[in-house]
Length: 195
Image (cartoon, rainbow, N blue to C red; front, top):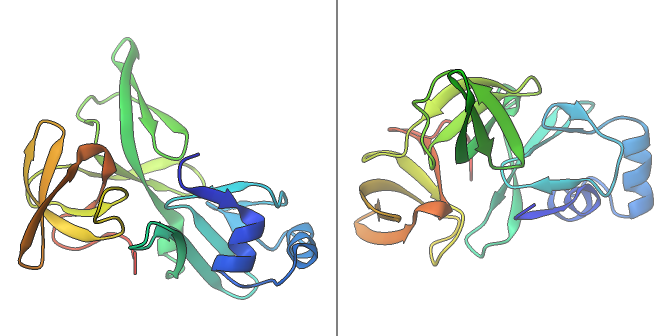
């Protein structure tokens, strides 16, 4: 998985709820950690970009993001936000009789009957059921988050899309980035917390 690290390191280095692997294994054995709404006990489980790690016993939830140095970081989020996860549409395949398979970031696939999803769009899915809650189109005026390039970890507003290049505005400056490095977060405001 691109941009991931074992749950063991997430708990010790990003969330800082444990100091040793032994403590991590004890917490996981007690079934006190959820990743994307599912209780997990495997300390080697890869946790990646936009995953939600929840510690329900102490009422804390975190989303895994990239900081501006391109390193994984955990940001605290509200309890209601921990029930959704943005997934970028990486590919789309017709599988017959009007059914489409969307290949999403985070190694997820969803079967849909509608074809109005495009590669580069973002889908907010409900956790842990994986039902589509909202469709965020990659278009002019969309608020985006960069997962690669010189401006990794930054947000901006789409000014234009030409082929596989996105022109976006951050503050007063306009930059370009590859289309594959963009996550749509919303239209006027972000649907999720990233800082």
